Image 1 (tube, helix red, strand yellow):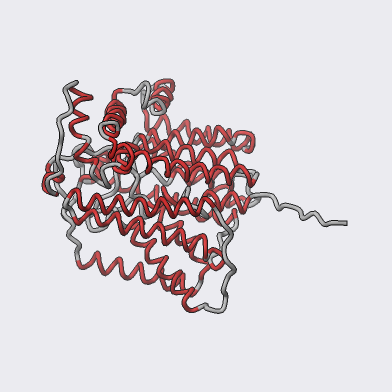
Image 2 (spheres, helix red, strand yellow; image 1 turned 120 degrees about the horizontal axis):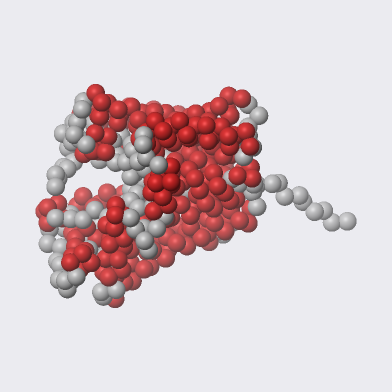
Length: 459
């Protein structure tokens, strides 16, 4: 396995500073750009790598937050009243503190200062939550229509770039394994894109935005919806992403009552030619059967999903091995080693031998890549996983209580966001947390689309 060492180039540092400081300056001067820019960087930033790692979404989010804090330091005249108690906010703060603690444990247990990245990352999420919850009035969320347009344009550009990257890798450069190996190429020059299991993640917000704008009064917006749906489907076809297809089909299914018959026919007309172009001789029944198999990872996995199921079983064996791991886990990033003997037990039916994390070199030479659920369960224990589940529950409760017209889509989005953890490890993707954090995307969409409650006046 190739070890990737952090080795930033001068041009990369300059590029980050130019883009980041520009975003910070825009937000400081024009606070209404806070949310649009936050949405854009957390969609576009998922794909391309930076300094041999996938930092763009996190780094640019940090610069946007810097601009937001600068705006507050200048605009001292607009003091706000204390924010009312919100258990969701308290729970998120508790979770952030817990994850920072687990990250410190991970640094110590692995003797690896590189894990300090996670301390910074979770602190960044906590600061972002503070800005959204306590300074949110200074950075208003766009209207539901503006939000949809921003997301759809960005998702379309993202998918076009991702498709172009794969075509260049496969057809122009003619590299072995083509588009499916693209994330492993050019490690020395940093020209890489995230893998096909992670790269389609923007679909999780792109499809809800498409549904929201599906029946817009503007012909241009309706065409934008169809174009974005086409490119999301094309990317899912080209990179054989079952997770993306599950999102597309589930969101469409729960939205059938809101979609006009003409739109349903149009989507079918988009799907069928693309299917026969990309799938060739594959039967339609086999295609949908393959998609359905992606929903049965835990109880009836297909051949390609067996490793994911085995990893989940190994995680359960690890956390039930001792009381400390059961409750608080092994510390962030420790799963890459502590799961190894349990993987051997699952695959080879041999007793799990004890393992000691000796040094960062051991982690580099022999570690296991796994899904987010397995990683978080082993690293943070049952307490960490329960805190995460509660954050999803609090967000879902807000969506239900606000009685907005997009409840079904938003609840489906939350469910798919959580279950995607069993497929890949997206714990370093900021968009993952933006969906369920207090005053995050799902809550904001639900709030701005909810009906205005009438005020009853006494006689």
